[in-house]
Image 1: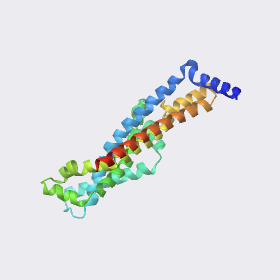
Image 2: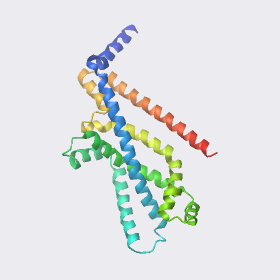
Image 3: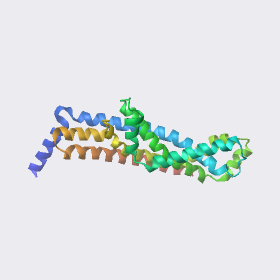
Image 4: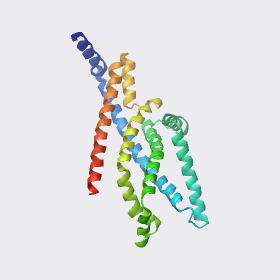
Length: 242
């Protein structure tokens, strides 16, 4: 037992203490959180816009008069459906590599490219979450907006969207947790995120156990923390309904 503890201590010192290798994990963790946060914001912006377009078409295309407005909405809706099909039908790591090595091949700002790539990917899932929230709102809410003199856009802005966000906020928070774990593939384009930092340490020390278990524990701690925050958020939203 003492020998095992001694070996574990030696491995810990080798992988994290010597040459301040723990700083690689700190830097990687910072990059992971930055990519996740900005990508989540990008995803929400993209998702809300697409959800509004898709739900507007689904709710109104049968009653809309033929003309330029309906034709334009039909084209934009088709583009949104194509985006959702492509993004949800291909692996995020492939999307990341296409954006990094093809679309932005001349750029070497890997973190910014990763933020954009994961944001575009997240936007497809956020769009369906928000669209589901919009479609679940009772039609009477739209009629209430019209009775107040609001047009469709004003009704969405002041009545529908606030209710939707309250309903889907816990799901969006869970999307953030999923996105946090998905960013672990950033190392495919040489970004020093948390997973890549652990792999760099492993490559230097030739000791895979300690750095990889350390990375796994950090991810686990983050997920437990954010899951706790989501649970707290859900309880507050439930309490506010009473």
